[in-house]
Amino acid sequence: MLARLRIPSVRLLPAARLTIGVWLPCLTATFASSAPTQHCPSGPLNAKSTVRHSSCSSAPNAMAANAAATDMGSPSKKARNMEPGTGLRPTSVGSDESAHGPFDCHGNGSVVTGRRCHSECEARHLDEAESKRFEDGTGFMYPEKPRIIIAASRDMSRTASTWAYNAIRLLYRQAKVACDSYWIRTLTKEKLEKRLETGANVLIKTHEWTDMTRPEKFEKITPLFSNVVVSVRNGFDPDPDWIKYATYQIHFEDIVAKTPADGLTAVGVLKELAEHLGIEGLTEYDYKIVDYDLNTLPIPAYGVDQTTKHWFFHARRGGRATPEKPEEPQAAGPDVEFEPGPPDPDQEEGKDEEEEEDEEGRKMMNSYPSCLLHE
Image (cartoon, rainbow, N blue to C red):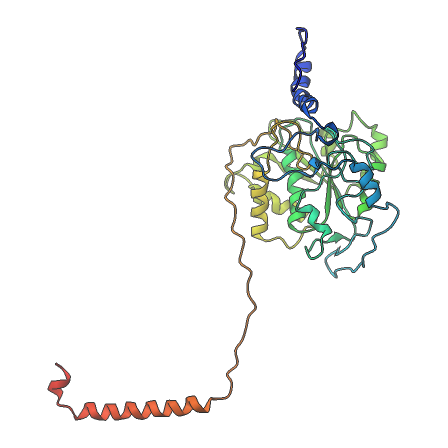
């Protein structure tokens, strides 16, 4: 039973109140857990959700299990066959054997970060569908040349930057292209190059960098960026230090537009974003189901969902209603052409007998008086 702590009455500055308001639910959950080594500090599963994010596993010692499961120095042992004309291949160019590798965190940290899971965990947290790529026959592919995609914005900017991050993640998932997603506060060349070792595309959600990294040091890592997606909103100052590196800007007003007359609409943004990232082969259904999934991702009761990066204080703004879930198109069957075969002698004989009976019937009808035929 959670013991009650007596805290003396003190006056707090507004900044201190905000800090306590954000972190107190997480601290309360940590002290309340009866098994601290199994507790996910990012918060429990949302009661309304039936999907648990991957950082909430109760593995007794995930860091030791990760180290034993994967040999960081060995390349993939699978055959590497390039799919012609797609830039994709069925296996990784790096070492990525399972969802329990050195990058993965299941509530107890990862080998790469060397830390237990916490509110700003920088380990990999794949969802259930993304983890299917390690199973045979699921159709997931790896890029021949992995990208590093940055999803950036000001912290607490209310520009839908978390929507943008999840949009990129789900577009790759829908296209069945391997993508590892992370939160990283301070970007370094070492962190980025390390995460490229899996051979998957690397998606990084981050905020301002000027307080964390000197400009001359930051300039050395920008050549690693393949795409920089920056979220902006009218009436809110964008981050000038990220804007100058942006390769694509997502406008909040387009995401919440209800009709094309109001803006690009969320589906329109997804189509442009997929084109910008070089994601091919998606259908109208694919874009609509991604839009639906983005609007129904659970928001945790407290803490943070390590996969979606949704915090408990996040909210869906803009007044756009959740779209209806689109119906999955029926798979078209193969076109079958039937060729006429040789005539059946029995059928032909029966046909001749029917024609003879019809002829006899007509003769009998003609022999009756017309007054009887029309009564």
